[in-house]
Image (tube, rainbow, N blue to C red; front, side, top):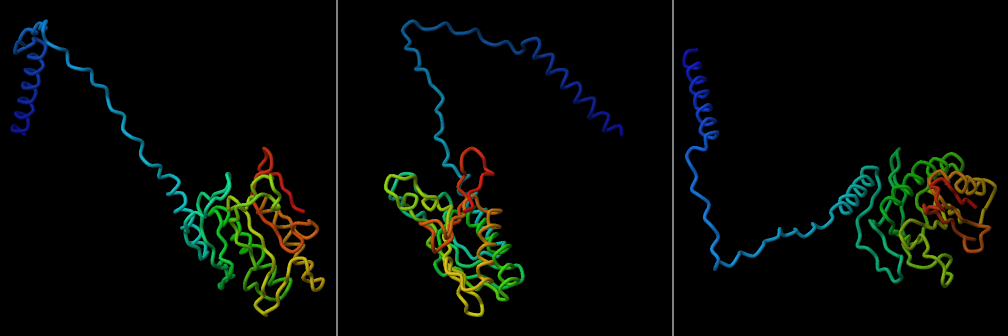
Length: 245
């Protein structure tokens, strides 16, 4: 206890001495040297602004999206951005989809291996897993084994019309589905309903799909007579506006 008290007293005295010396300007400083008339003043130095670091947010976001896809049972891989042959085309986070795993086991194959923007791929996978798969099992008595899709990304104007705006396919946020291949080897082709069952299945897909997409086009539209078109393009100022035809 005495040693501790002594150390405390010594530190107090030392602190007081330092403070006293500082307040009395001790030791004295030498006088300021007057400027030399012949001396050339040193050039003014300006702080150098460091070069901005390469943005890592986009890369980090793409990696996180792909990791989330895989954790949800989607077989996908990052792929180089496809060439953009027209202004306005390009994909921020391109991924190639191979199959979509289902909650109860198994997976739905995507033979065309479409290339999509990763966030849209997550929407499409959810649609297939949570609507298409259970609906097929319940209404058709068979599981969907594969989807007949287009390539996903396609740098072109809407409806291939010269001078039109770039299609959502041009940014990887759209996909076309032309048919559903069932586990019992049946193939349901969009626009060619074999019976009332398949017609009801197609109609439900078309209507309920608007819970996932902002646009669904299909038979009845001249440019989509034999396939469904799904995309998440925003229409106008509202994110809630839907075109489901």
